[in-house]
Length: 84
Image (cartoon, rainbow, N blue to C red):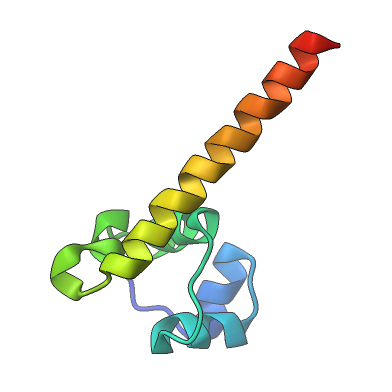
């Protein structure tokens, strides 16, 4: 795992330092896209951040829902293009 300051991590993933602080404290949760960037920046698998063992089951479910909604939106956009 890379040791980064909140400011360094924020710059790498494109959010502000306050957001990183909120993620660390569990006050807010990153989008799945931001979580992927964080995972790459700290060189840790994304599964680490959403594992059941870390008692993040609710967060993991939210990420899955967000990913499915994102996929559904993409599918709907594709259907809209076909129907034009």
